[in-house]
Amino acid sequence: MQAIRSQGALGAAVVAALLIVVALPLGFVLLQAIFPQLSEGSLAAPLSHLGAIFSDPDMLGLSLNTLRLGLCVVLASAAIGIPLGALRGLFLLPLGPLWDLLLLVPFMIPPYIAALGWIMLLQPQGYVQQLSGVQAAGFLFSFPGVVFVMTMNVFPVVYFAVSRSVAASGARLADAARVCGATPWRAFVRVTLPLATPGIAASLLLVFAMAIEEYGTPAALASHAGFFVLVTGIERRFSDWPIDLPGASTLSVVLVLMAMLAYWLQHRIQSRHTYETVNGKPSDASRRSLGYWRWPAAALFAVVATIATVAPLSSITATAFMRTLSGGMHVDNFSLVNFVAIFGDQSGALNALGTSLALGSATALITGVLGLLTAYCVVKTRMRGRRLLDALSVMPNTLPGIVVGVGLILAWNQSFWPASPYNTWAILLLAYCCLLLPYPVRYASAAFAQIGDNMEAAARVHGASLAATLWRILLPLLLPSLAASMLLVFAVASRELVASLLLAPTGVQTSSLFIWRQFEQGSVGQGMAMSLVTILCTTTVMVAVTVWRERK
Image 1 (cartoon, rainbow, N blue to C red):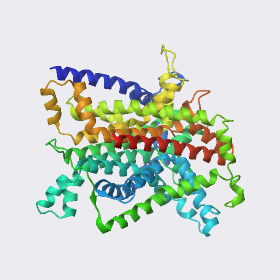
Image 2 (cartoon, one colour):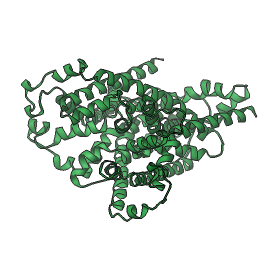
Image 3 (cartoon, rainbow, N blue to C red):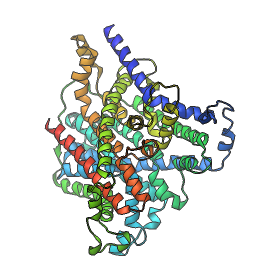
Image 4 (cartoon, helix red, strand yellow):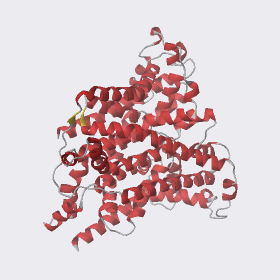
């Protein structure tokens, strides 16, 4: 009875937190989609605008383009991330930590910065053509080009999820299968890969959600080819006069439905194919030798790292060190003038960087705790409504940041609140937590699915409380997955742009806002220099945390 009461109290606290962080802004978005005059304080004429929206011939095209883009990015990310993650998790690779670092960097690069870097690299008279006479603008400004650029940004989500899951399960059970006569390939397919299925499914769901909600890359690349998606349609309804809040909210609901379809498919696959270890014995986490295959495997990692990391980062770096873009790739055009302007802090660049790092750290901590507790309620309890709780926790990753920002404005810019975070730094923290909560929830849920109930039951039999069981038994087992998700949250929150543009109060500037405003003012060199500094700072923090964890 004590355990039931503790789980009930925990469930109530999680529900209250999700209502504030997630349900409130999303609820106001839904209300705006139902009541077109909500922003004017009226509930008149509900759903009167739907006929015009769904009769728009572009509506079907936007929806199909969004699905097509999301599925292609998922398939491409799986094709790259799963093999590389399995190799890294199971075998000793030459320079293994270096590959982890290099494949982490693409996730550190903001998507809109990466897209701009690829444009400067491959466009006519771009850096590649200046050096080699070759340009690939026809490929870049097309649907395959958009899929390529987005995949290079998000496949590390799959890579790290697979490598950590495979490393955590170890090779002991696969070795037992081989002793019983299985070939190495059969042991991998029938034993190792099924144990990693929860992590793979969770990471692919996140990739799909990230692909359908990404704005910067489709706007920068696909618009030239006439390829538009729901997110660009939402942005046009916000930016073109007259502003169409009901239409943007309705398209956002369509995005939610797409994400819920992906969630349902993932849940169906995971519920039908669940594998876990039940003996509680520690896994053999030591990696095995690849023998003479180690150098071909290292060459494969080198090729992927060169394309995903070195190429766009070289473009960003070159632009950051250029005096002028028109000067081209000439020695006398390179200087430190952009970095001198940034570190001189004449425009508040260092203060903006500090604000981003602080908000990123706070977001990672809050979402990590809330994600852990939410995943426990969903996977390890039998509380009513846990599937709805799981769906609510993953919803934010299906919405563009601009829609979440509007929801927060509609929710908190009301006169009936005795106190409101609106127009303070706290509204940015709420927005980041709402947008990024799915990361720790998905990763923690996948880790909980691999942990049998027998160890928790044993702890309860010996008198451990719910808090002690979570702290002493369950948390150490899922810490690698949870820490990886929190690092991803830190990286994304430190560079979030769209919600920051909408919600940042006067006097509060983040690094992404600084970069965006430099681009608007035509100071592309200073913008790229600030991008490079931000990437180095966030990557250094993540590497330091990873090294500390491994030493502990």
